[in-house]
Image (cartoon, rainbow, N blue to C red; front, side, top):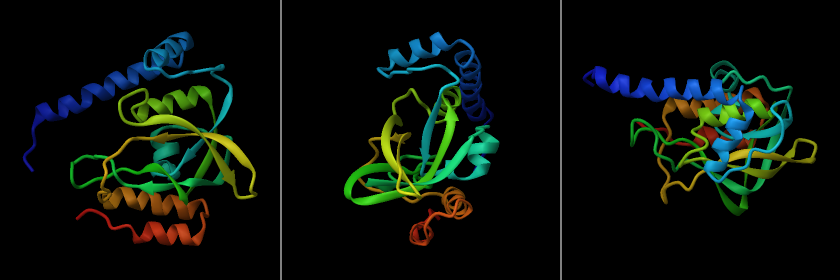
Length: 200
């Protein structure tokens, strides 16, 4: 593939703007709330309030959630989301060779992942890294069961997605597989992730 410097600059510009927004929004809380309202979303509470976040994709892996996104969860639990199924029906980059994870309502299915307890300020930072507020992922509060059968309300991301699933990249699906193993998710779920065909 030929290297195009202008393409690299176009990629960097949104990232710089995103980092600037994170810095401003997490310090000026009313501004963050105003921004969310402009997208039809609510941001209730104080920055130091704690919330549960349910990760089913790459955020199950510490390299994504802890190292790259710099989250500092005070608690982690294995989580099970009944009534949903895991899909790979979003357009990634490069198109046709990547398909990020998504979840879709399905009464006959379930999704396993990791519950993280983080602050609302951290959730706003996490949202920005996932393009929220924005046109793709939408934050949704869902009832997730932990390993002891207790139900907690957790924020997770849901997108409309494509009708047909694609194939995730090998790097991406490896993050899911390794993250699932690191957090001791059930063997049948790990076997399912191992069976997902990656893009060539």
